[in-house]
Length: 68
Image (cartoon, rainbow, N blue to C red; front, side):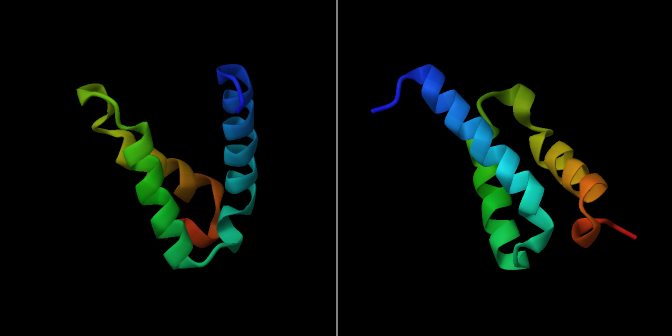
C-alpha cells in the first residue's frame, strides 16, 4: 500500500495525464470524470465555486470544451 507521499505523486501524475488527454475523451467520459472531480475536491463551504472554476479551466485549455 502506498504511503501518503506516494499516493500524492500518483494522483498528481494521473491528473496531469488526464488533463493532457481531456479533449480526446468522449463527452460522457468527460462528464463522469468532471462530476467525480467536483465531489473529490469539495471538502468545505470554501469549495462551493470549484465546479465553476474547474469548468472554466477546462474550457480555457481544451478546444473541444471551449465555449464559443
